[in-house]
Image 1 (tube, rainbow, N blue to C red):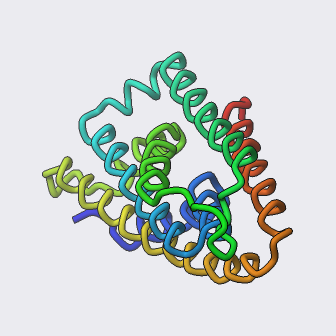
Image 2: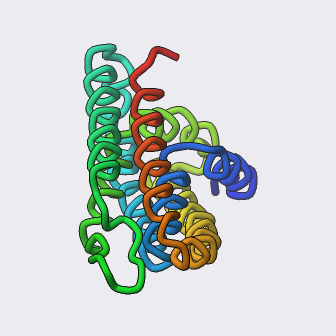
Length: 204
């Protein structure tokens, strides 16, 4: 069996660190309510299945070995976050105030979150770098162990991001009572997405 508890601590540390996933969930929950935040959390957790398959099948190793492949994936993820940011800045419906504007569809939030997670190369590199470190080679069934570790990572990520979503929903309820807060939160959310995109695009 792999070292589950040690891996869980490492996974929770990564999930709790400020990054595109939890900031996106937080801003979605604030601007549209806890349900939208929870859907975003589910989307990001679903996107982790993609990284799991890359790691297990060995394609992540190819991405890590190829600077061009890594750069293309990094810039694609950065461009997508910036695109979301620009749309948020231009949108007047990110916060629903007394039913005067339609919120973004939950299905759209879900798929935005899935794609944003899939296009984050740092998650891919985390899976290919850390999953093997907690595998017990002497126990055999290495792909099965990696799948188990990935499942643990996905469950803990969903749990933590859901807590973030619930907290953001309470904050969002406060802002919904103030009309001026809608514009402010739109601008803050859009700026946060754009900043995250730029951060991913810049060299480390």
